[in-house]
Amino acid sequence: MDFKKTLKTIGKLLSPLKKSIIPLILIVAFLLIDVYCNLTLPKYTADIVDVGIQNTDFNYIISVGTMMMAMVLIGVFATIGLSYFSSKVSAAYGRDLRKISYEKILKFSNFELNKISRASLITRNTNDVYQIQIFLGLFFTTILFSPILGIGSILKAMELGTNLLWIIAVTFAAAIIPFVIIFIRTVPYFKVMQELTDKINQTSREILMGIPVIKAFVRQDYEEERFRKTNEDFKAVNLNVFRILLVLLPAMTLLLNLMIVLILYFGAYDAIQGEILTGTIIAFIQYATQIVMAFLMMGGFLVMIPRILVSGRRVAEVINTEITISDGPINTINDNPVIEFKDVSYSYPGSEKETLKDINFKLEKGKTTAIIGGTGSGKSTILNLIPRLQDVTGGEILVNGKNIKDYKLTTLRERISYAPQKAILFEGTIRSNMLIGKEDASDEEIEKALKMAEVDFIESLDDGVSQGASNYSGGQKQRLQLARSILGKRDFYLFDDCFSALDMNTEAKVKENLKSLKENSSMLIVSQRISTIMDADEIIVLDEGEIIDKGSHDYLNENCKIYREIVSSQIDRSKDLLYDNEESSNYVLDTSYLKKTAGGK
Image (cartoon, rainbow, N blue to C red; front, side, top):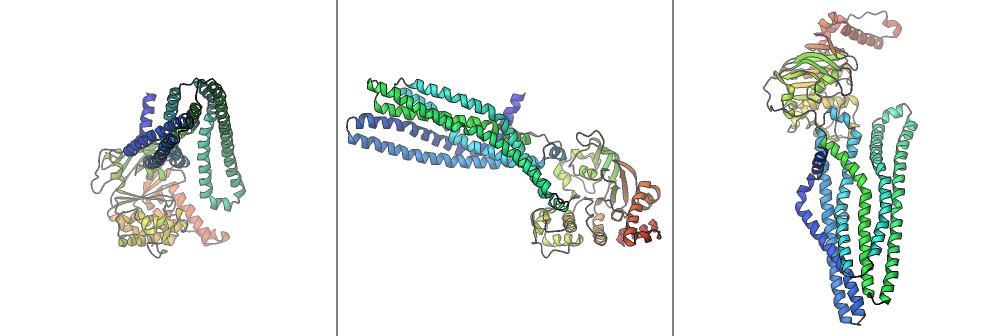
């Protein structure tokens, strides 16, 4: 079973090569021509020495020399063609493998993203794929070339009829020993190197994203030391690997030179005895050198195998990851859909405690539902379950009476607009970010959505957005994200605490503008602010993953203790802002007044 799985994995990794059949045929053709030219040249050298020079036949030397030059030129063009098409195929392979891996990552749910860290995914889709790409280029130009050249040289050396082949055999046997030692010593290090590459990426990412916090708490020295330690670990492993590998070149050079000395010594003795010609000795040295160099190149490839295997396994792990959230068979949703949570429970992988338990409520056209609760009560988790960023572990979510898992993901998500807690904008322009919400939106539609979100701080739709939208404040990013989420017409609008960075006045204006969406759709708002949710048709109070109570603001303010405590705490904070601490105790604010301020009026 494991063998079949391995073959299937190798098939997936090699599948991008199907597009390069013609270049692969040309690579093989150029390779064979190059090998033939290399195998022919020593024989020409022997003929020039043994026939031309021995007989002082200048015309013969010119004739054979011309053929040698022709072979050299053909070999050069073959080498150029081999290098060109090898580079082209390997680059295309890297591009296509990266695309396959990236498309698979885009299908990952939160469950898969928790199994393989984001830093590791970046490394796998860049560094690991690049390692495989480099290996593929070397495979055509060196690894495939070497055994053909080596075997051909052995056959040609045997044709010379000398008794010096034992020298090549001894040299080859002596070369195997350092290769085996180096292979055994370096194998464990390559996996550690890739893991440390992940760690460097992760540490760099954390530091870059946390620069404001690091500066605010004067933690530069600590973070520098943390990065230095990770970097030093990577350096130490690299030094260990390359110290071992550096032994290989001088050892092989020594063996090669000793082989030539032995051939000259025993060859000269045979020549004196008249058993071998001088040109034959020269040709034999060239063939012997080609044989040893060919197997040295193969040995160098063997040293690379551990690293390539590690990279291959890591990329294969991404490609072979089973997607937990997949399409259902239904590809249409009727108009005016209703989403119903029916005894829904959810537990995060590896957690024994349920994050959500027995959740029941409905989202219907013309209705605004709000969720409030303490930190970690499961508010955002509920929103993630609706577009199936995560799947329920108990109960079911129904869309028009059918399980949400029965619908195609695209069909479901086309009906939903989602604005997450953290405002996410992409590098580009205001227009390019808005078009994510609706691909074919006109400038008029975009400007209308921006107006509804109270985006009054831009000059034009071509205004730039830097990476991470660092050129906008938190409140501005939230308003831009809101504009994008309401640009397209959807049946369900999900707002996950995305008013938190807005001041009360701006929030009231935005909420008043959003009322027009309610006529043809349903809104679900998650917030910690009473002012944000108090005018909702139904407010759900969550505590430790369970619905404590639900109803209107007036009903909950009178009947739900937890809700009343939230209201009171926010009112007390408002009093402290309005008055000095000493004065605040002299004023009593009637929370029933909040009934009159619904909608921000």
